[in-house]
Length: 243
Image 1 (tube, rainbow, N blue to C red):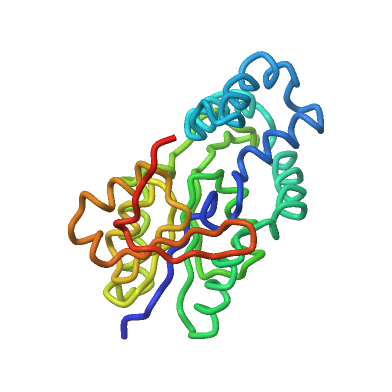
Image 2 (image 1 turned 180 degrees about the vertical axis):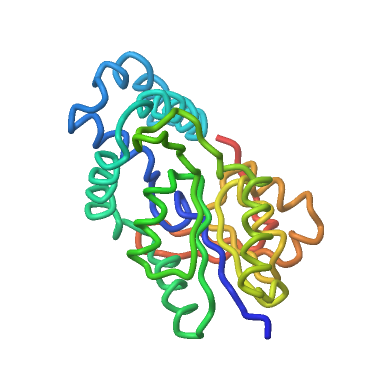
């Protein structure tokens, strides 16, 4: 018998920031990454986003490039220790709506999957904290000595998320028509498209545009925006005001 399931992105959908960014900052704090990497390469892009002149995705991509490069050669045991600290400090800094939905799905006996572009060692710890059925993050490869090679299998684009969903659907006998998915960027499009109940959480401009351009997705998607102490539920035809 097929089972109703819920697919969750993490960064920007459950967690209010990026797990990878928090891990990067911790690596600097523990002196495993030179602070000059931040100040000389990433800080400007971050400042542009913080002042709302730049784009968060540009900041995230630039940081990810240096993050992967700096992890090369570091032993996974050290990284796992710092990853545990990241989840301990940040694991509860989530959107109230999404946290409540996880509990609601559990109460209904639904299967829950985390699929995220964040590193697998962070995603696995976040999944453990919330007691989900299965998870998948970007895989960071290690050599025979358990040191990172600098190679990764990405999980932040729609195509790779699609492959993972297909795998989970077959393995866990998912009832897609009655299942749910939660995402915030175009990397989550395949996840939103596949199920009968897609929910876009604080969608960025590109995701909202993609939903509006896809008639089938437009008809079935719910838009949820959580700000301050209010959660708004909107239709996909919400007006976008360019700033």
